[in-house]
Every structure is written in C-alpha cells, then in structure tokens.
Amino acid sequence: MTTKVAIVGSGNIGTDLMIKIQRLSEELEVAALVGIDPDSDGLARARRAGVRTTADGVQGLIAMPGFEEIGIVLDATSARAHVANAEALAPYGKRLIDLTPAAIGPYVVPTVNLDQHLAEGNVNMVTCGGQATIPVVAAVAAVAPVHWAEIVASISSRSAGPGTRANIDEFTETTARAIEVVGGAARGKAIIVLNPADPPLIMRDTVLCVVDDCDRDAVTASVEEMVARVQAYVPGYRLKQAVQFTPLPASESLRTLLGDDAPAVDRLQVSVFLEVEGAAHYLPAYAGNLDIMTSAALQVAERIAAGTSQLLETRS
Image (cartoon, rainbow, N blue to C red; front, side, top):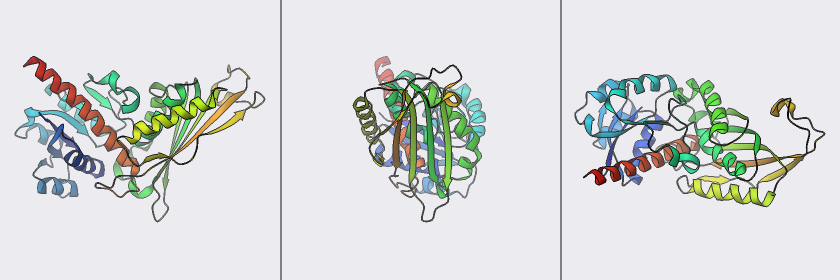
C-alpha cells in the first residue's frame, strides 16, 4: 500500500521532488502539488501528469477533495512560509517534512540520525549544505572529538532561486547549528557562496574539522564509508580528492575558534573536499544543491511511510 503525499511549493525544489517520487518511489504517491502561482511550470507539469493541483496555497490543499487521505506533507516553500503552513496543518495530524531552514522540528540527515526521529510530527531537512557536509562531520566525529567544524558550500548562482536567496541568513544559522547538534562538533560554522561562473559549476563543498591528533587511517575510512552511504541515494555525491590532514602545532593559537579555555596542544585539521552532481530529473546537473535536498527528503518520506504502513498493518 502506497502512502499519499502532498508537496507544498511548485518551484524548482517542489517540482524536482514530485518527479523523483513519480520515477523512483514504490512507497509514495504524489496526491497533490500546491503552489501560489497558477502559471508555474511545476503546476502545469503536475496537471499533465494527472496530479491534483491548487494555486491557493495550503488553504487550497486543506479544501481539496481527498485531503484526508494524505499522510505526509513535504514543504518546499520558504522558512517564513513553513511556519504559517505548519500552523495551518497542525489540526489535521499530517506528518510534515520541512525542506526549508525554518527548523520547527528536529534536524534530520538520513545517514546520521533518521532512526531517532521517525516518530516526529515535523522533521527538518536542514539545508542543502547541511545534507552534503554534516555526514562528513559526523564521520570524523565517530573517530575523534571535533572541536571545530567549518563548512563552505559553493553553488551555482543559477541554482539559487528566490526562496534560496530569501533564506540565506537562515541557511547559515540553521546549518551551523545542525553541524553541532547532528554532526557532533563542539562548534560549527557555515558559509555559502553563490558562484556566478558561466557555464555554471556543480556544487562544491569543503569541510574543515579541528580534532586532536588521532588515527588518520581510521578517519579516512570513516569518511569514505559515509560518502558511500550518501551515494546510495545521491549517486552524484563524491569525494573530489583524498582526505587531507594538516598538523596544527600547540604553538598555533586556535582560541578564536575553540575558545579562550582551549588548552595549547598539538591538533590536526581534517580537510574533506566534495562535489555533488545532480541527477537532472528536472533541474540541470549542476544544481546538485537542490538534488541532494530532494533526494534526502525522499529517503525520509519513504522511511516514515514504511513505519506508518507497518503500523496500519499491525492495527488491521
């Protein structure tokens, strides 16, 4: 039995997510695509595919025939809009997957902490930069305590639509917090770069972790294993080069990063360089930043749906 889902947001992310579910998922059925622009390409594509649509936002979804059959709502709008959407949907008991940086519910990165949050009513997919880099921070933290983790996400300016641009501040704040909460770093920092290069470049991510001196082979193995796990649902996710290690002698002050009480000891900088090429289901291949978000959201929705289906079967 498939679980019916609604996607709120008929822009690039919502449309790509709809197409991914239709092409790749046996557990989910797109029952509705919701937008606010009746002339959007996403709504037009949905209508051609036989998916119910509304241009009246979440209120239009609630009024739609068959709304009661929808089990999961995926919100691909903006941080501000999600707050209002979550409030409007609260009385109806829908499971919400938030693809904005609103972070009303707990952060979820599928390869790191999905199992802990399968029962939550509203889960947050962090950001594209978070989905790409937090697995690596967690992989390093599995071997040695991460005192500082800094990520730089460089994406093509062409792949940053109005929603992404409106959420830049929330992007940095949400990603930095999730680096700590999910990735396990004591302190986190996130930077986003909108690269104007033409032709557009695919997403590049740099992860820098400051750790105590440790088993470098174990760190490399942990990172490579994590990359393989992410590749299972984002085939274009890969290491750009080998994991690098740079000694940080005790004489090099790191107080600005680690705090005034950080002891002066020899440490190690772990540098990981990634690139994310999109699957080009709807968006160009260079828009890996959007592809990793929709791919991760699909993983979460399928896992939640599987749990819901099992519960229904048990009750029956």
